[in-house]
Amino acid sequence: MATVLKLRKRRFQCKVCRRVSIAKNSLVKKNCQISQPVWAKITQLLSEKRLHISVSTVQRQLNAFTLKENFEVLPEILSWDDFARNKGRLAFIAQDFETMKIVAVLENNRQTTSKNHFYKYSRQAREAVRVVPVDMSGAYIPIIRKLFPKAEIVLDRFHLVQHLSRAMMTNRIAIMKSFDKKSLPYRAMKNHWRILQKDSRKLSELL
Image (cartoon, rainbow, N blue to C red; front, side):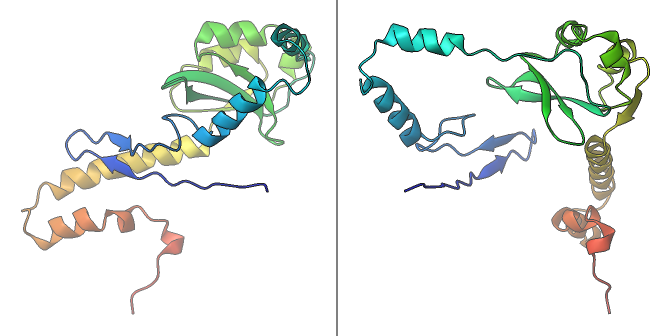
């Protein structure tokens, strides 16, 4: 029977350096979403000679599969971002903002890598891009202006909210430290910090 396993990992945060670590377990390896029993089943199926063919034949068949990319069409709204892969190394991803379809996944987030990839597209395809949402790092902005001359660069909402949230937390800690540790304002700002950063629409009025 098909089985879906939902695993929640406990997170720990150091009070000194604020670094977060995740609890280890024997079911799933670090930075992996596939459980060990599934890997064992994959190995078992690969080792069994059910089809009576050699390993080299299977490898040749796998190498025959190729993905054909269309370098003539790009979406009007093209999102740029990076993500962690291979033990924290950053990779690049671009996708259609409206359909959420992935346009490109590159092995790293270097400017040269992304620039060389999108220069494979025709100028007409690159000029069709009207909006490019990016994060607040600013590293991609000079490249985007060269690759997509008619596109408007927009800072995405997620990173704006994240930046404001961090600024709010920094100010809260600075104000909190100005009070005595045993005082009510200090304890209130320390223990109930989530209320200060909660969406005002989700707060109830005090009677």
